[in-house]
Length: 248
Image (tube, rainbow, N blue to C red; front, side, top):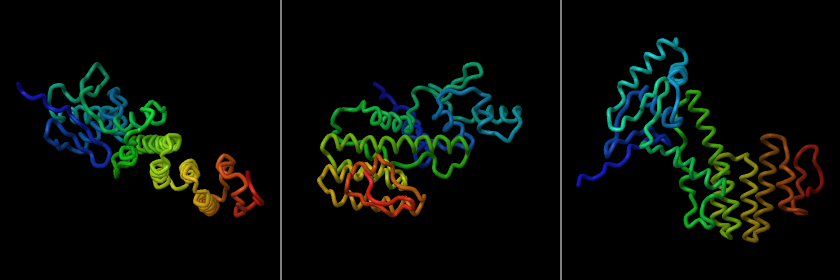
């Protein structure tokens, strides 16, 4: 019996890569842009696709460029992109790494995963960015959406791991979120919560004060009441102009 070939794979996290069977297929730049957009959206009209990929061109020229790029895509069965009237659809067989990441992140945020993570999905949530180096508007929008989803998932994962009595792993998730966005308060709250779950009050207070200083220096604001209530009677932060005395 002939072995079943692996499904086609499209990698958009980090360097663009299309894998058909066991081969990596090289595409021209327009082919990469077309397949990346379709891989992310799944279904789109020719008008929207042409206008997005060739925004400076006339509609006629943009549609011509789209036809040429579609013609140059690798042939296969099933085809990577099917046409249905004015609509283009990516083949359901294509495995896109961004979709796997999105499913993982949403599962964490929605808490639809198993009640106890055997192996928390830290590696999946801290991988490479979407198409680094690509600076087109549609890529920037998708990249920011994915970044925000990852950050929310890391915050949720840290909270889940604290509830499960695994503060060390919760700290890893919290610090991954801090490294991705140093001024994100929810990430620093997760760090403090993990310290408190371990009984390390001094570490929690030290981290809180460090965040207060950074927030004051960078933005001239104080942490939210939600953060200060984590350490009632222990913060004593007076570094923000206009704030004095103890909070909480």
